Figure 1 (cartoon, rainbow, N blue to C red):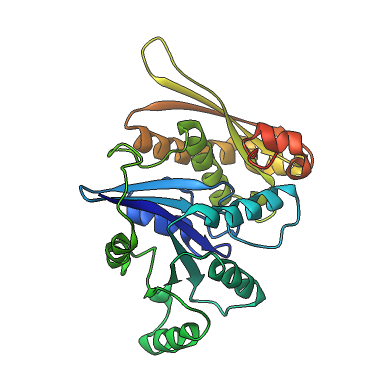
Figure 2: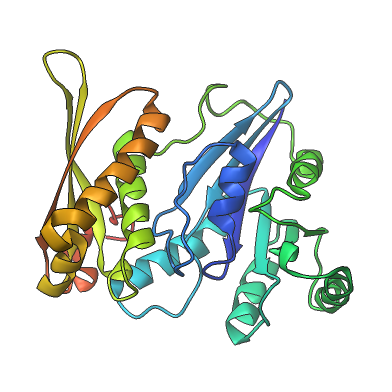
Length: 295
């Protein structure tokens, strides 16, 4: 059997989580058009009879503005230390800046094969794609270059097929039916956070965290899930609650549907909100919310 680890590296909003979900045909990483949506290192597992690929989706590499940002960037940069292959994702629909040069330098120093993935080419015409390929071929030494659309699935199957050829012979690290090593509570909390990102204004998303406080079955066997949404200011709490509780209800309804699909059963979801001022800069709070790898 061929097996190995593949890191997904790139700037915020390059499409790493969308690609992971597309490859696995399952939603294990949340997706949003807000940059820096992914905060933790997320493992996705792709298994066939001949191959097991363990994908590691990382936070986008950016200039951190708080301790949570420092955690995110260090998590992403540490991921390249122990993998067999790197997917370097670039948003092909926007012009590359100095931040892209920094990420490129990081992956080129990794010492492992690097696949350049020019994502979101569904937004470009063939002439633009050809020009972009020429530009990037001169920027670095890439094992493979793939123009693709993670959202539409264009060229993704071919990407996986070629990836298999680069992997060494190795063990099956996870059971064949496993799709992630993330605890269920973490996946659920991220699905809830995704709905907040989707439904609230720009001032709220980066100021929230979600923590599953309790999961247990009631007397008739139905799963009861209680989760808390943490915000930094009272005004943000009001936005998430909405008029007469309408926004919180909408968040809960949308999240519950995804959770039920994930678990394959009906669940009861209870949400509440707490204010923790400046939580993104407090190590103790970050640790209690699961961002504890560096602390």
